[in-house]
Structures are given as C-alpha cells and as structure tokens.
Amino acid sequence: MTVRHDDGPTRHDETERVAGVGSFDYRPQEGVSTWSDNLYRIYGLDPARDHPLGIDEFRERVHPDDHGALDAMMGTMAGGGIYTADLRFRRPDGVERALHLRGESLLNADGQLERADGTTQDVTETRAIEAELRESRRRVVEAMRVAGVGSFEGRPDTGEFVWSEELYHLYGLDPSDPKWSMAEILERMGREPASPSRLRALEPGPFEFEHQMARADGAVRLYEVRGEAYEQDGVTWVRGTVRDVTGVRRGEAQQAAVATLTRQALEGVPLKHLLTLACEHAASALGAESVGALELQPDGSFVLVAAHGAPAEMLGGAVPEEAVVLAREALEWNAPALVADWRTDRPGHQPPQIGDFEILSSIAVPIRTVDSPFGALGAGTVASSRFGDDSTDFLAAMANVLAAAIERAAHEDQIEVLAAERGRLVAQTLEAEERMRRRVSEAIHDGALQDLLAARQDLVEAQEDGDEARGLLGRGREGIERAVAGLRQAVHDLHPVVLQHAGLEAAVAAAADNAARAGGFTPTVRVAPEAGGAHDDLVLSLTRELLNNVAKHARAGAVTITVSVVDWWVVLEVADDGCGIEPGRLAEAPRQGHIGLASLTERVEAIGGRLDIEPGASEGTTVRVRLPPPR
View 1 (cartoon, rainbow, N blue to C red):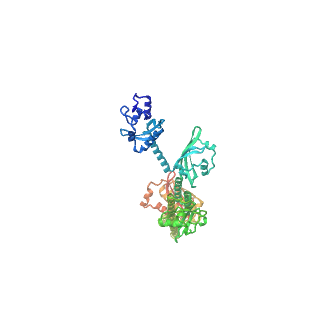
View 2 (view 1 turned 135 degrees about the vertical axis):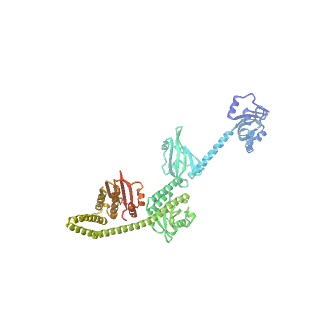
View 3 (view 1 turned 90 degrees about the vertical axis):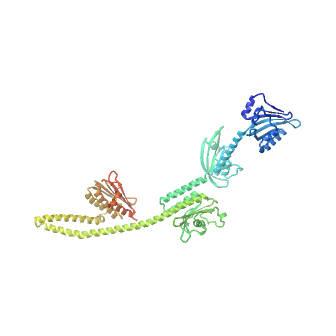
C-alpha cells in the first residue's frame, strides 16, 4: 500500500525543495510507504502520477558499482539502527544524480522491521564541487612538490604546527615521522631556542627570510621562508611556505662567478693571477674544499699552476700521476670527467690527500685553446655526490673563460714582441735620420756656407771700387746674405745643437720662435722638467712639424706648446687659436698629396703612441701626442 502527501504544498515541502532533500516513511508491517513530494522530484517522478519505487525497481536504477553500498544499507536497516549510503541513481529521464541516503529503522518485539524513515538528499552539485576541490588540492600539492615548496601553519608560542607532506620531504623526513619542535628547528638553524615571550611578540604581518638548516640526513640546505603572522582570538598564529633554494642560490653564485672572472679577464688581469682567481671563485660557488688549475707539460706530465685549498709548496711542482687521472681523461675525451664517490665508483683509486682534506667526489674539465690543450681545471670535495650537471656546466664555463684569456695572453705576447721590434726599427730609422741631418748640416756648414761667406767678403772688398759696380755688387751681396741666413737656419734645424747643449725646453722654445716669425703668432712654451729624456729628438721633430703647419695654414694669433708627463707617458700638445680644420679635410689631405699629419701619425703609432687632432676649447685646433714610457 502506498500513501503520499496529496493535500497540497506545505512549508515543509518548500524547505525540502530548497535544501534538495526528500523524506520518506516506510512501515512494512502495514504495507505503507510515504514519500514527500520533493522525494518524488529527486527520483525524477511525478507525485501525482507515479508511485514510490519498490526495492527491486530502486536497485535497477542504482549504478552497478554502488550495489554493494545499497546492500550494506539494507542490511543495516533490517537490523535496526542508523543507516547511510551514497549512491549514483539514474532517473527515468536518463540523468544520473548523486544521492545521499540517511535514516533510522526500528524493530518490534519479535525482531522484525517495524518502521524505517529517513531522508534522501541530491548531492550531485556538492560532490562535483568536492571533486573539483580535491583535484585543485591535488594540483596544488603536485605543484608544490615539483617546485619543492612545503607549507605550515601553527602557533609559535606553543609549537603546535601542521606541516604539509612536502615540508616533511624538504626536511628529509617521512610524513609518518614526528615533527620537529621549535627548539629542534632553531637548533638545526644554529641558533639558540627562542623563548616563548619572544615568539609571542611576533608582530602581525608578512615576513620573509632565508636560513641554513641541517636536514635529517645531515645535509645542510638553504631554505627560503615566506609567510604571515596573524591574530585570532588574541593568539598569534603563523602560516606560510618553505622552499629549498640551495640549487637556485648556487646557480646564481655560479653565474656571478663566471661573470666576475670574465670581467677580470677583459680587464687584463695577468694570467697567473687570473688562474688563481678562477680557483677561488670556483671553490666558493661549488662549495668545494679544493680547486686546482693543471698545466700540461711537453713530456705529458701536469704542473699545478694555481690552486685553492692546496699547500703553497705544491704550486709549480709536478703532480703525481694518481692525482691527475680525471684531468687526463678530461683532455682525452675533451669533456668533463666526474667521480661521484671514489670509494664506490673507483675503489682503490682515491687520490691522495690534498691539504687536510680527504677527497671523496671529484670533477675535472679541459682547458683547451684553439691551437692546443692547456691543461685542466679540477675540483674536489669531502662530500659524496656533491657535483652534478650544473657543476660540470659551471666549471666548463670557467675553463672556457680561462682558455680565451690564455689565447689572448699568447696573442698579446706576440704583439708585444712585434711592437718591440717595430719600436727598435723606428728608433734605428730616427737615429739614421738624425745622423743624416748631422752630415747634411755639417756639409752645408763646412762647404757651401763657407764658400758663400768667402764670396760675400770678396764682394765687400769689390764694392769699394766704383759707384756702378758698387750698386751691382750690393744687390749680389744682399742675395748672398739671404742665402747665408737661410743656410744658417737649415743648419740650425738639421743639427739640434740647442737640444744637445741647452735641453728640451730651450730647443722647443727656439723652434717656436722660428715658426712664430714665419707665421706671425705669439708662442707660449711650457715644458715639464721630467718630460725630457729618451723621446727628446722625436718631441722636437714633431714640434717643428706641427708649428710649421700652424705657420702655413692656421692664421693663428697665439699658439701654446706644452710638454708634460701623464701616467709615465710623455704628452706633447700644440694648441692654436686659428681658423681650424674643415670637416673631412684630414681624410682628403693624403689623396691630394699632403701627407704631413699622416706621416706624423705613423711615426707616433710606430712606437706605440697616439696622435689626436681635436677642435680647440673655443676656436682653432689642438694636436695632442702621447708617447709611451721607454721600454
């Protein structure tokens, strides 16, 4: 017999509809089953047309995988007491819904089921949300696991904390292990346990810090902690995340080490010192107790040319063969050679002690230039399996920087030899030029000039006879005197007698006076006493040439000639206030046959110097010549 509510909707029906709940009352002894209207709707039935489902009809619509749960519920119901079940139910329209059944059954005196009532709730949306939350949580947990992040929440004053599973793993623990107390954590951080009063004084708000801590296996790792403190019911709580940043910080340190070594190499740090710096940088970035640079010798042996963590007496000496196994392998394979643990990977072949350390893990990378192998860069540590792919990549990068510096040093040595040879050739050329000047000067002085002087004297004597002859002879005498003056000036220019006897300042001043008379300008000469020396002849020659250019082309009113010493370099500066040099004129001049300045530039650069032509401070032109310190 089936009974249903048919007296119209009630407040109770509306409440059930809003909550998605339907109720029933089953009395098997009377054959009565009463369903609320909303229970019909939950099962997809019409309360005005359909009747409550029997157990067999109900079972047919339950998902086969949930039959076990249904049978268990029916068993509990038959035995009396509270029963529950979660079932997937297919409605007549084919839509499957998730239902939660809950009720209570009573037995009569004979132990038979007298009454069962309860509720059915449609939890489809709830279960979907729960499934989505579970999936979201799973993804969060997976993301935290991949990122190596653990989370925590608790009260620092009492030490009551909840850890995520990943946080256990970060600390080297199993989630079934007991959590560390605050005192244990602080002890592993190397700090004294904080008092409860200090912990309670933690101010609400975000916090962030990094710290080292020993894991359960003894490995010391670097952790980043981020979180916030907040108050609840007068109690300070903290929550946040912990991330193992050991690898990240090590990578940053390695990148910084490579960048620093590269900068030092570009700055021209001497190779021997650069090798030592490379060992120090690598030891710090890798956390290695010893790092060494080995140079391959012609006989195939290795010499320790730089090191960190090795006794000073080992430097410069041949390294025993058993200690260079990896270095030799790295050069032969042209690839990194690595031993994670000598005791297990190569028992009996562990290298000898280096200083006070017994090496367990070693790595070596080749240092190879374009033309030939230089040697190897190797590192060792007392910890097993310390080095990985990041370590080999880092050490290989350091070795590449060293290889480039070695090539550069070799090229610089070659350039220095060529520059020295070129300098010697230039010096010989200047010396030969000076000898030629002296010979020409002496030939003019002792030959043509003496003849002209004698002819002038003859003309003086002949001029005393007759007026007409006196006029002709006078003009001839004037011409000879001009020739004598010109030859005397040529002798003066060719033979630096003033430089020899009076020094650089007097010689430059004399050259300035001669050019000033020709160019109509006022000269100012400043020569530092320390500027005189090996470059005097060249400085004087350059001064004359530059002043002649000013006299011919600049139309200057004033010229300043300065010779000084700056950082051991001799600096000649000739500055005029003339008309300046038109843009493009310097590049065009050699094509038109004017090679004066180009020739001066070549002479200066031949000995490693530099000649610069710049506009003057206000007008005119400034020529600045820098001559290197004598070798």
